[in-house]
Image (cartoon, rainbow, N blue to C red; front, side, top):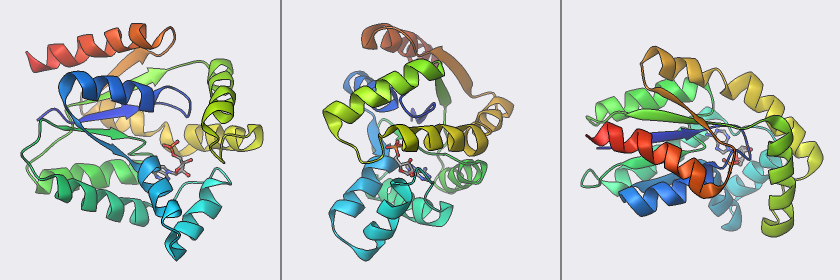
Length: 192
Ligand code: AMP
């Protein structure tokens, strides 16, 4: 099974590249951001609490996220080519939880693809996305907060995968196809 963590700061292109990877490799997609936005759209009380946090650029608690995630993984079953984890893990604790829950199911993350993009470009992309996708957390103040949270809480996850020998850095600048070609090279090598 080719289980992949797609990683990087907000605006790095994780969602866009996930789509390309899914097209070519047939992986299943788990985007915790999308799952949270679905919960908000359902109008539930939990959704309301989640929205309040997302709109401030804060992270949702590890417990809520892991519950949602376990549910998704178990729904997919094991007869799949693999899963792409997009937007998860976002804390060291989540990385450990993911490791354990996959191990319990006889699964593991094969690689973490870290998309590296400079901060100026990230802000440019996020402000553009704000115009076309209308996400309530793509305002300049919330973007800055999300980048801060990324550096403080999410970036340390890189070391977790480095220690396990699973970390691969990818230049996330250039066109969508150029970036995908770099990712494709790493994934096709892993499958050999
Ligand atoms: P994303 O679509 O991945 O950019 O996520 C949007 C927002 O959802 C983030 O800014 C967080 O508030 C929340 N979120 C998504 N994934 C996670 C996660 N793994 N842990 C905590 N919060 C998350």
